[in-house]
Amino acid sequence: MTLSDKEQFDAEIIKNHFSQKYDTVQYCTGEDPPDIYLEYDSKKVAIELTELHPNLYKNRTTVYNSYKNFIKNIKIDIPDYTNYLVVFCHANIKLNKKRKKDIENFLKKPNTEMQKCINGISVKINSKKIKQKIGTIDTICFNINHCSRDINTVSKSLMDVNIEHVFMSIVNKAIERKKEKCKDVVKPIWLAMHDSYFSRIFSQSKDESIELYKKTINTIDFGIFEKIIIIFNKEIIVFDRKTT
Image 1 (tube, helix red, strand yellow):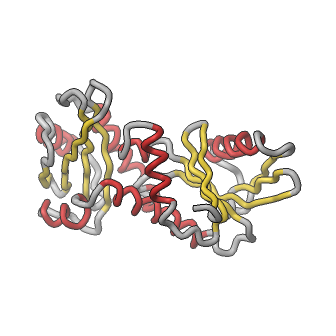
Image 2 (cartoon, rainbow, N blue to C red):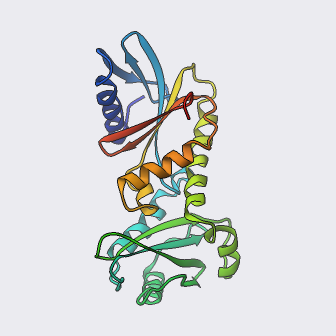
Image 3 (cartoon, rainbow, N blue to C red):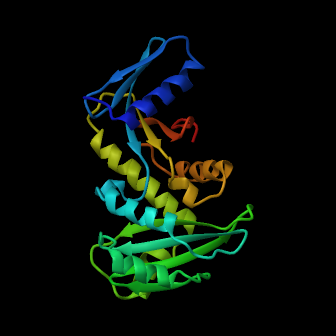
């Protein structure tokens, strides 16, 4: 198989990390699964690579990115020292000009716990205090099986759970999916998940992101994976099944 640019990037980051611990480290492509084989000193391990964000695992990345970019470019007033997390629940509904306009009007003067259904899209705002003065805004999307015009129904099932639980649920789902895909791969096998954005919408610093992962990974059954690696741009953290 041929690695994508992002997979190549992740493989190099993993190689560089383990090169600090071992004399000889190299990798080669796998059969998908796994994506790569890492060789260090006299050992060889299979590694499955993946990207972590809420909707990648339903092949709805394009729709998810349209919501993320819409919120990124929206012009609304946000109080100092405040972060707004805009939560969308919908049945894979694409944004058109009318939906964008209606949602933007709804978000013009956001406040804590605003929620509304707009053209089949359930929209809710959660707020939290942050250390930096300038207010920030992020978004997360949940795909549901059908359009809902009842914001209370959606809130009860998806949006009213605490943030740590949402984070844990999505990470666990990603790991379970890869367990199934890699069940026949010759052991040992590791799982490496690239987080370029996901944890930032739940935390405001690198330390908070790492703490979220520590809490989450400590509750997860590693199953077939000997290690779970989280990649943050050019840094990684490694969780070992034997010590978590």
